[in-house]
Length: 192
Image (cartoon, rainbow, N blue to C red; front, side):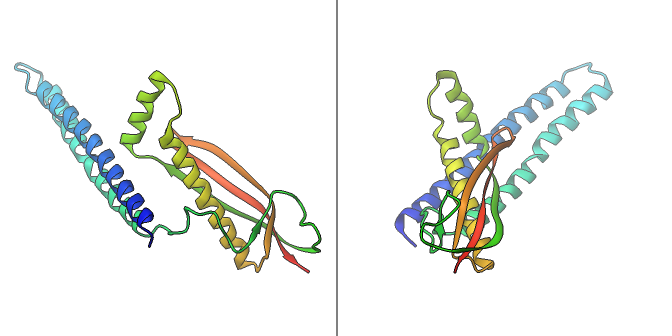
């Protein structure tokens, strides 16, 4: 594996841990606030129980966050080392023919991915909107998502025995705040 890929994976892991730590600090602050509210003297018993339950709930949110971090570490560890490069053995074009070739159409192929950044990157992107400029974290996210979608499309075309994918198109949509779906699709063809 190339040194650049190792550094990129380490940076991705640090970023993911940073996001979980920032989320954890936020949850800890909320739990402390609710705990302090629950400790107010002469508070009705039901309100004391409500604030205590909210404090415990805030702390319990760390379990799914840690589970998501574990899954993200697995994704980073299993990431394809060649998704950074956009070279494939298959010809990929966005025109509907290949000059000088007779084509046999095999069918439509697609690749899709829903990608998001971590809590820390989302928070910093929100801060960036105060002053303007490019939000590089989201640019990187969309580039990575597009590369994954193309790789999945090529894998599907290879499973059909295709020599090329023509008329390639991309689509993107926001699935939720900080997450985007990217789809790549085209027509798988075989040379005659």
